[in-house]
Length: 172
Image 1: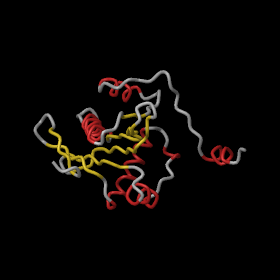
Image 2: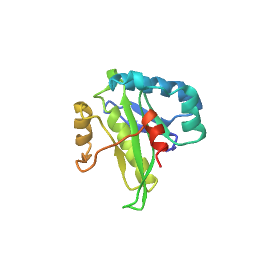
Image 3: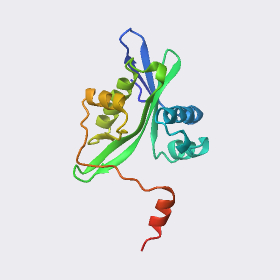
Image 4: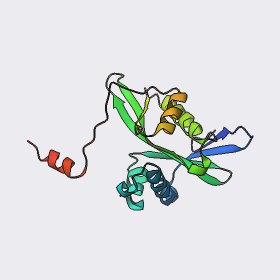
């Protein structure tokens, strides 16, 4: 089975195709990010452009994107990148985004994406798969728990961005 095209059986016998995004997919990736931002109630936060995504995903390979298709239509995507565990002494993969279009939810597409990503983690000999989820997002939390994820209660995610990041960089 080619690493660029992964088929997963659906319950009705049809197939899901999960493939790595290529340069010509970047407009689609941006569209999916925008759709995801609507679900996250964060439309105003998207500043990504085709040029930025092309630079960082395709040319600099800082992140990777899997696009999921079913019956000739795009149903979802996952964006991920490496992190590193000092305790394990090896890399992990951080899933930044996983998104299935509204009309396609509940059909196994999200599960197929996470299973594929888990396989990538194992194939690349990484130690773990991490992600964050909004506390408000009960449907996703329930889905992740059902997939065997553990909710970490001993850590809180922190972020510095925008003007705060600039200000921080000037501290001595």
